[in-house]
Length: 406
Image (cartoon, rainbow, N blue to C red; front, side, top):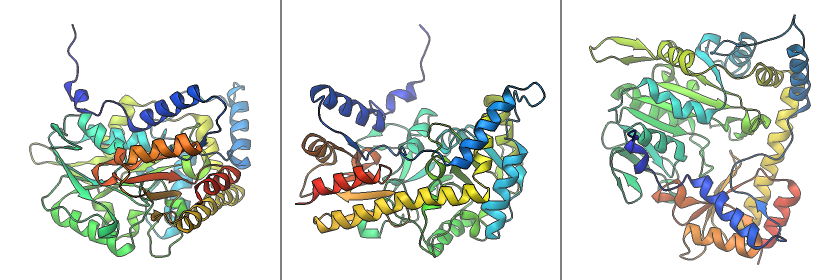
């Protein structure tokens, strides 16, 4: 028989969101008439904005014409989209990022999982706890996790993020090679201020670490002192890669398009001590393992940067943030303790009494038909919490909150 990658055996039995889906499916089968209000997996409910739809219709017509047809595109993404991103997302904020430092992909999740392909297999990784499972699981798959002991892997540094430290990850007590940061944070819904993020950038520069910065929810930031990009911090281009997505800002969860920024000045070190450009290595990796996001999806993403596209996507973001406000206020009135929902579409909900995360998940599902995501699935520090999303419709959000009121 062929040998397997034993590292997969060190993963939890099932992926968190797969287990949520399994339990919901079993409940629906047993209660076919029960309405389910989904506030668990972070999928969106609003349709794509008209500007993106019109652009994709036009792109489909291009594919029907011999003169306008597009086959294989550049693995790095089309220049028309990379240039728009550089102009609107970075130059507009006073950040100097060039188009050739931007790589178009099929979503932040893929790039976050794949980026460590270009890094050493024996490096040490630090993550916050709780954490988006992809950060941990993909490193375990690559052999960096070590044995699983309880809720943690022995080869990974876990940085507790909880109410006691204001949901701000502490600097590690031993040096990691790579640090994963997410702001606004998934799952807690909290965000790092400019000074808090600066401390991390300064630490990475001092210790020679690489920060993988997940900025998928930056469009939801409303607090003035919260940076939209890590590159707003001086020196961050020397130590950070930034990942962004159109999924939660423009409804591209089913269309698939996002991007990763790898500054040219960002270096790694080879075994012989030579400094090597991470931009060059990521370009080589993508050219080999990725054929590029579709022309149609990239034309849709380009339209987001038009005046109409910007207005329409902002309306969608504000729709979800109004849901988040409704949820925060209703849950507070019902006596629940919450975090998040100010700069992100996630509410981090403390379970009542001593109820475990999965017990509370089962209670909400069986009693009210409400689906959340158990906090323990994001790490040991998430036990006793549940993540709720504001991505459902206004009607479903109001109904769910009315069910939770005493």
